[in-house]
Image (tube, rainbow, N blue to C red; front, side, top):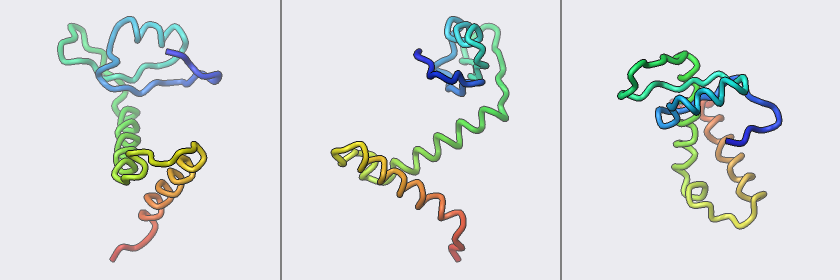
Length: 102
Protein backbone atom coordinates (compact mmCIF):
# COMPACT_ATOMS: atom_id res chain seq x y z
CA UNK A 1 0.00 0.00 0.00
CA UNK A 2 1.48 3.30 -1.04
CA UNK A 3 1.61 5.83 1.81
CA UNK A 4 1.37 9.57 1.08
CA UNK A 5 4.20 11.97 1.93
CA UNK A 6 2.86 12.76 5.40
CA UNK A 7 2.43 9.42 7.14
CA UNK A 8 -0.79 9.13 9.15
CA UNK A 9 -0.70 8.32 12.86
CA UNK A 10 -3.43 5.67 12.64
CA UNK A 11 -5.29 3.66 10.01
CA UNK A 12 -9.00 2.94 10.44
CA UNK A 13 -10.08 -0.12 8.47
CA UNK A 14 -12.71 -2.86 8.52
CA UNK A 15 -12.30 -6.57 9.22
CA UNK A 16 -11.23 -7.28 5.66
CA UNK A 17 -7.82 -5.75 6.38
CA UNK A 18 -7.20 -7.83 9.51
CA UNK A 19 -4.03 -9.75 8.74
CA UNK A 20 -0.79 -10.23 10.61
CA UNK A 21 1.43 -9.15 7.71
CA UNK A 22 -0.63 -6.03 7.06
CA UNK A 23 -0.61 -5.07 10.74
CA UNK A 24 3.16 -5.62 10.97
CA UNK A 25 3.86 -3.48 7.92
CA UNK A 26 1.81 -0.65 9.42
CA UNK A 27 3.56 -0.90 12.78
CA UNK A 28 6.98 -0.88 11.12
CA UNK A 29 6.03 2.40 9.43
CA UNK A 30 4.86 3.85 12.75
CA UNK A 31 1.14 3.71 11.94
CA UNK A 32 -1.26 2.41 14.57
CA UNK A 33 -3.70 -0.10 13.01
CA UNK A 34 -7.25 0.32 14.31
CA UNK A 35 -8.83 -2.77 12.79
CA UNK A 36 -11.39 -5.02 14.52
CA UNK A 37 -10.42 -8.71 14.57
CA UNK A 38 -12.02 -11.28 12.30
CA UNK A 39 -14.26 -13.82 13.97
CA UNK A 40 -11.91 -16.72 13.16
CA UNK A 41 -8.78 -15.11 14.67
CA UNK A 42 -7.16 -17.30 17.34
CA UNK A 43 -5.82 -14.42 19.47
CA UNK A 44 -8.04 -11.36 18.84
CA UNK A 45 -6.44 -7.94 19.10
CA UNK A 46 -9.02 -5.41 20.22
CA UNK A 47 -8.73 -1.93 18.70
CA UNK A 48 -9.59 1.39 20.29
CA UNK A 49 -13.33 1.29 19.58
CA UNK A 50 -13.75 4.98 20.40
CA UNK A 51 -11.46 5.82 17.49
CA UNK A 52 -13.08 3.16 15.32
CA UNK A 53 -16.43 4.97 15.66
CA UNK A 54 -14.99 7.77 13.49
CA UNK A 55 -14.77 5.32 10.60
CA UNK A 56 -18.51 4.69 10.92
CA UNK A 57 -19.22 8.41 10.67
CA UNK A 58 -17.18 8.68 7.48
CA UNK A 59 -18.92 5.62 5.97
CA UNK A 60 -22.36 7.07 6.76
CA UNK A 61 -21.37 10.40 5.19
CA UNK A 62 -20.30 8.65 1.98
CA UNK A 63 -23.55 6.68 2.01
CA UNK A 64 -25.57 9.88 2.21
CA UNK A 65 -23.56 11.47 -0.59
CA UNK A 66 -24.05 8.43 -2.83
CA UNK A 67 -27.82 8.71 -2.45
CA UNK A 68 -27.59 11.60 -4.87
CA UNK A 69 -27.68 10.06 -8.31
CA UNK A 70 -25.31 12.51 -9.94
CA UNK A 71 -22.53 11.63 -7.52
CA UNK A 72 -23.15 7.88 -7.52
CA UNK A 73 -23.12 7.57 -11.32
CA UNK A 74 -20.56 10.34 -11.94
CA UNK A 75 -22.16 11.90 -14.99
CA UNK A 76 -19.74 14.84 -15.01
CA UNK A 77 -17.02 14.64 -17.64
CA UNK A 78 -14.36 16.71 -15.92
CA UNK A 79 -12.82 16.30 -12.50
CA UNK A 80 -13.45 19.96 -11.69
CA UNK A 81 -17.20 19.76 -12.29
CA UNK A 82 -17.48 16.49 -10.32
CA UNK A 83 -15.55 17.89 -7.34
CA UNK A 84 -17.58 21.10 -7.48
CA UNK A 85 -20.85 19.20 -7.32
CA UNK A 86 -19.42 17.02 -4.56
CA UNK A 87 -18.68 20.18 -2.56
CA UNK A 88 -22.22 21.42 -3.14
CA UNK A 89 -23.72 18.11 -2.03
CA UNK A 90 -21.54 18.00 1.10
CA UNK A 91 -22.50 21.59 1.93
CA UNK A 92 -26.16 20.71 1.51
CA UNK A 93 -25.79 17.82 3.99
CA UNK A 94 -23.82 20.01 6.39
CA UNK A 95 -26.40 22.82 6.33
CA UNK A 96 -29.20 20.42 7.30
CA UNK A 97 -27.68 20.16 10.77
CA UNK A 98 -28.01 23.94 11.27
CA UNK A 99 -31.49 24.55 9.88
CA UNK A 100 -34.55 23.94 12.00
CA UNK A 101 -36.64 21.38 10.15
CA UNK A 102 -39.80 21.92 12.24
